Length: 121
Length: 107
Image (cartoon, rainbow over all chains, first blue to last red; front, side, top):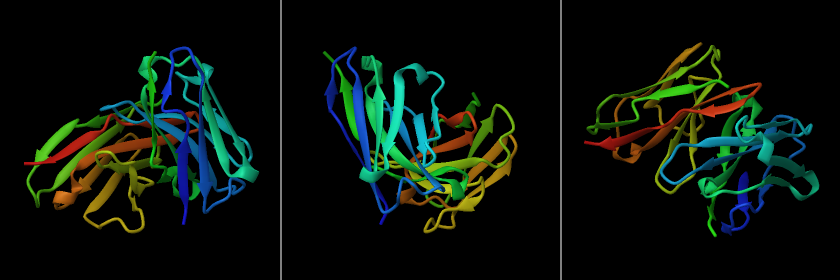
């Protein structure tokens, strides 16, 4: 069974750096046909893609957030880590990690449950 | 970046009705278009990939069509459990874009 699970702080202060971890099981981060993305959703709003990473370490970032984001992976730990610097209250959202399946037009075929992050002093 | 314009933003229909949602890309994306269903408080779920391919286990009342810049998502007979927000999503070599979502409610 394929699962992804997000972990990280529930509350961060403005200007702090957010670090989120996605732990995957049921597939390997070395699988060339799979990748992992981070996607967020502010309360009551639409989904917003943040970044993705593939087995060959290919990375891509949202144009609007690129300067604040870093994505990395530890294949041996089955973990993908996202850091976002200079957090602001507008970054308050549920953050999801999702598997990208290159066999399905790079669709997000499996999602984590999401983790809510609030930015407040 | 490619922009995805989804419409309507919300709709209300009766059980058994045919429901149609459209998604327009700002440039040609061939068939690289996926559709998701998100129920309140839950993560999105993939329904359709490559514009028209039904994900395994998804009921056949859901369908998708289109290519290039114009895409359509259809629920042939709306069921109470279909109450959710639906999103289109495209992928290109620059990244990923989601549509703004369509909230589907029962009349």
